[in-house]
Amino acid sequence: MRNPEETRRKILEAAYTLFLQHGYHGASMSRLVEATGLSKGAIYHHFSSKEEIFVEVLTTRVKELLAALRQENGSDPREVAHARFRVLAHRFFTHRQDIHLFAIHSQNLPAGLIQSVIRALRPLFEELLQVLAEPLAQLYSPREARLFAIFALGALRFSFLPHNARELPGHFETYWKIFERFLGGIL
Image: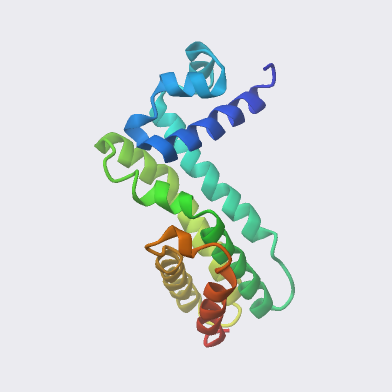
């Protein structure tokens, strides 16, 4: 593989799957070599450590979410807010494994890695709140818009994590209708 960006993407995709399947500690570099078909040297050419790969996997997922949210634009702030929250809710529902990766696999990480994750994700989560609050700030004070975005993000996080994963297929519209009622009181 001669394209460095393509190689990085391949490594990150394989690492994402391994982190989900085996957790941080179980996703060894040997497994990554096997999953990618690359040598350890090729992987280390693109990333200095498994820690760097883990942080990059997490930041990539948040950046993808931000890109999807930014695609929702328009002149009516209520419609933009509604559309962005729908994208967010849909993403939480269809990519619940990302929440699992953030919440579950991040619990037993080495302290230094936790600090690296926080440093990398803090500005992205601030940006996420800003993107969500932006249309609301045209309707409410900036403080109220930010607080609503924080509250809504927290509500989504818990409402889209049913105890039985088999409950999920086909239920997005039901979950969305409940959340939409919540939005209706604000928008």
